[in-house]
Length: 151
Image (cartoon, rainbow, N blue to C red; front, side, top):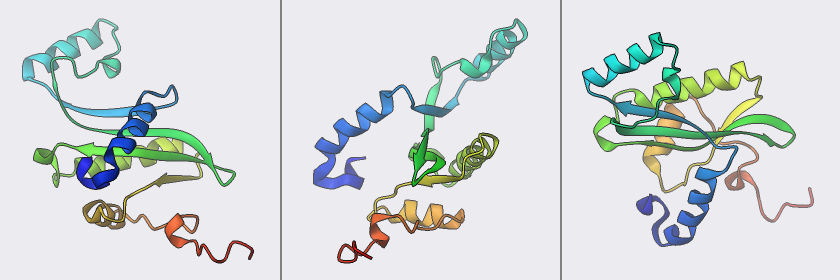
């Protein structure tokens, strides 16, 4: 994260930490487990324990997406706050898969859109979202002419 935010990271880190623990924060985690741990998870599921709520305890966190349901410009949207993947799993389709899950959740929750923010300097992320069909919103600060506020 420090690389993305540069010298602004110390103040951004405090904001990110607050966002991540907010009650409205939602997560999808990608974890790697040993085969024996997966078998235990299936056994727990058969015994009535919800496997979907098992955290990465005993597993290795490979990535996550942090999202919230918010209202932007009077439209209910699913807002992606973070999508992070360990470098060893980047380029293998997991990011695309997570975004497909996000889009499905947004659709099933009757959200008007999926929105996210990307730093202009994060060219890899800009290319990733562009390849998935995302476009810069007309409400993006990068699209607003600061001299044209009265129009």
